[in-house]
Length: 104
Length: 104
DNA sequence: GGCATATATAGAGACTTGTCAATATCGATT
DNA sequence: AATCGATATTGACAAGTCTCTATATATGCC
Image (cartoon, rainbow over all chains, first blue to last red):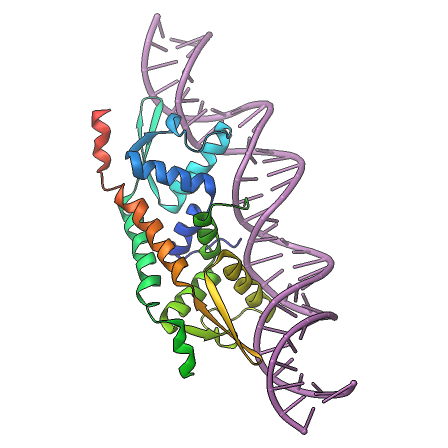
């Protein structure tokens, strides 16, 4: 898949993986989560988890805060808002029924 | 990237490409679009466009309607609603400030 | 500094994906 | 049936992505 420059696409690409969506959902549910506590997506090796977290960081989905050896991840509100706006954008203008076809 | 079974992930994966997001945006703006009229994403070969359209079909984003030799594509409302719900889900539960950290 | 724990990075392998040229299929017209 | 235009499919290629083992880096404690 091509690396995108559009921030919207970057957000989507980062979320478009089962493991990473699971991470996002856990963050949404719990607020801030220590890297050691990502359990919903477990069954993967630590480096794999670390890699996924990096993808999310790079795309701007998450912010990190280190407490000693522990690193806490949380959702960046700007990213969430952007994602929300994107979905709204696709929805808002697609309110037209597909039967608008008939007039063409 | 791993092939996902979760419908949410499938929607995201299909949208997570610059060309395909452009297509979705055009469909959102115009309702139903003939395959021959996808212009926002042009600069790509016809087979590439066709491939992208297939990805969107397979993921459930679009419905098709043939009129003679022409095929019209439109957004499936169910997909749009699902996408919207997904964004709402991530947002709704992430309303907590990251400063909730302090209590841990 | 040595040691332990947490987590990131490097490298390799298997698999997936975007791209295009060539070709096949579909529907309409003659 | 032949021909044409629209569009899907096939096949090959290059690049990207997920996964894991091994290792490096960061922090804290003694």
